[in-house]
Length: 345
Ligand SMILES: Nc1ncnc2c1ncn2[C@@H]1O[C@H](COP(=O)(O)OP(=O)(O)O)[C@@H](O)[C@H]1O
Ligand SMILES: [Mg+2]
View 1 (cartoon, rainbow, N blue to C red):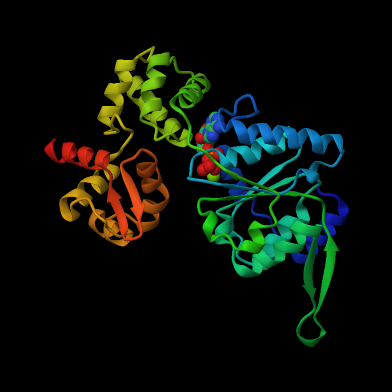
View 2 (cartoon, rainbow, N blue to C red):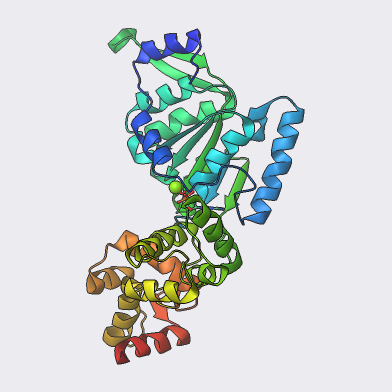
């Protein structure tokens, strides 16, 4: 990262160390991240509107005029990947952080001061920013300025500093938890969509090449069907299938191999894992299908409430097993039938 001298001065002023450990973790963990718009499958509307905005910003010769962007939706649908992609498309850098790690004012100020023109500052779980950090962000987002304090006690004063024009990309699984003033400062607000089986199969075939696997198309379909409409899960299942194939010394992976492998790992035909099944069957057994409160579901399954709410439930709702009512969660007809089958097995 090129840091110009004025940045160095500002940096030493605050002695802030932008959290690079976290960034590196994200980067190295992920050999399967899409590297260009061509690799990024699905989310067609979002990508289309982004391409238009990028080309307009380029014509204006002002990359940051692309505007700040908020991405929301369930985990594993490609929010972080999109932030990296945007940066590589713009020829700038993506700096990736998670809101809970930005605890002290100097965390966020250090990051803002180190940003170069057009850099992407990605803040994951942005609904979890603390109030002070959030308020420090406002002038930065709006006017590319920050307020920093100097001196102590009665002689302390606020200094306003100009910073480079960056692009903030915020990601959240909980749009409703973002304060209105923060939300309203984003130009683009996009909901991430679940992926179709065809899209997931394409992602799986691309990634099997990256992993050096010979996966047949029908085999990719089998994995796609069980991947909860989510690329991150497709990747996880692909890794399980790879282990199975290596164990069996298979040079090519067929549909049957995939079915056997995923059955072995107890991922069923609807993509449900053992916790999904436990949620459905205990709702039927103990509460005749509901309504049941989230807390109760957490208690009877022994799973964390937030995990149920953010991870399990959205997919169970999306696939028509469950719905939400004022009085709690209720099994749908499909959900009851499925829960019955599970109990009979
Ligand atoms: N649109 C996509 N095309 C191809 N692969 C994707 C796409 N979206 C996500 N992935 C894959 O899924 C993984 C998880 O995506 P990520 O961006 O980390 O999701 P999120 O940040 O929304 O939780 C990525 O590493 C990548 O391999
Ligand atoms: Mg992410």
